[in-house]
Length: 542
Image 1 (cartoon, one colour):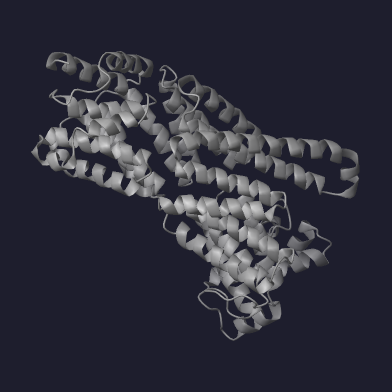
Image 2 (cartoon, rainbow, N blue to C red; image 1 turned 90 degrees about the vertical axis):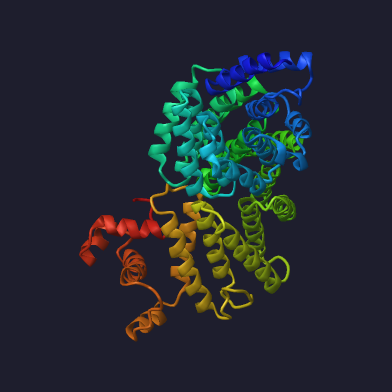
């Protein structure tokens, strides 16, 4: 490959990547590889070409082995002698490989090094890519603020380079980060803007990411049918580029997760009341089993694809989702096995999010054993508390608010279940009231994290915890302690809410469960009554 030709090739690959002309760029690389089968290390553009080949591999062209082989021509011992521009390109290519291998911290070191000498980078497209990959690393670690900072800078540089489609691809990543921060309206706006730009391209992977993001957002809102519809479109988009793409596996896993939630809804309807069961149980039971079957099939297919890519996060997510399906069906041993396998996969890559989810599943399994009086209760309580405490510790290594809230909720539920004092652990006080006080504090912390969130399955768990800390406490003892000024670290506002939680449900029962009568009796607004009852899971109205 002569230098003149490589200059032209590099310019074409950069332009097609920036404009998301994916098919065109891949055809160009296929033609090159059919002639040479490799990059010529003697070519003065070889390092820059390797960097952009890495970007094309990430876009869906061939396999990461091509980049690894190319890096073999730039061993670390010889890198000190290469030009600074070449060194930057080598770091970028190597960072991409490490992200692919889920060695996120090492990848982040590379991208941070590139950005530390950004004054030497006169190419805004390369700066955009360095920020984009840094954002991906921080997102994988659950560090959403840092990820947002980098992705906004990446967008700015991409626009500066005149590459609006590349900037739109970065908007897709930014929208997901905003969604994780609870800014759903802003996230949907960005997603719509990116969709309108990328719909004109053949970037099927990013287009699939857009549809998958819509699906996950609608899932969070409990609009499961709409979520499934967008996941199906995402699968079609991914398949147009690669029927075994790792993002396809992620969407299959998400679809299986939604189908499990839909199956749980069917089971609640089956258990609703005897008359309803007699009329419709056969149909509901058939739908319930069909949803479970589809969920397991989608998870199995996702596991196959993740196995091809040796992706630990994905494989672990499949284990967690499959474990929940087994737990729903009462198969505690298989659920526990899946949780342990997920934890092992997360531990190998120091993946705090995956490890926390795995420990949460273990905690739920042990709590089920407690409720069903399976095995020695003291030992089971010990295991449940250990799993819950570790889940909280792991979740706090991330900025994933929902994961933190869910961990706190299940730590609180575990303390309620072990309020007899049979368990020992960091939060167990040796007596029921101490456990319930700790559970009440955990409930408040979780509630503040879930403020303004939709009423999904995590919110339902929070309502369960609230009902238990209220009904499980000793109201007389609490009132007596308050009268003596013993309020712990609770604010006056929190004490007011605690008092409302104690009084309003009792008056509601006395007044025949009539909200209007409670409002008149206590001279407060019906909205306040409904809000308290809904918070405690006693009334559906908000």
